Length: 258
Image (cartoon, rainbow, N blue to C red; front, side, top):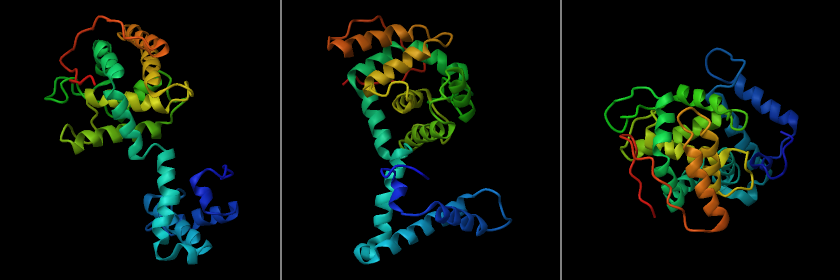
């Protein structure tokens, strides 16, 4: 509410009073006991009402495909803004598989493994969880320690974690709600793209700057060395210097340098 015209929900031209009415009616229509907050069913009801109001604005032009047009004009752009679109995952996978970032993660493997294990559960489990796995609790502790919660909300980080675990699940590489060490790499790349500390940085630079930040965690000091080496390459367009690899631990996922 009160947002700029570029926001997706501005497509539904409602006054603040009408928006409040949609919320109250959807909340009051929830099945079972009345709630002071909106449940998932209530949210679905509110979205349906927004779609109905949107269709009423220009039913003749929208025709029989009005509901589809509503989803394309409102829901899809909103999902992108919230980091829920497939584009965010595809971008992170592309950045992670790039030559410079792939090399950076290989050179940083020992420090990243130390950090991951520090917050992991079930260490020593069968693959892909030999290094253990992260849960929502692990993510919260990590985010608190590196002061990320002031830049990225817990709900956004949780959605990124869910996207990474779901991607592993879709490819038979893990279980739901259990982030593997390989998934942790992808999650870090996604987090780097969401933080507002470096608004003008390229995707690869964002990853490097995040690893420099993580070097403050005990056991991660070497991350800064590898990350700054890649930052110098990105800044000057040089061929990367041969930073001595820290060695791949038992948990290090295999990556192909493109």
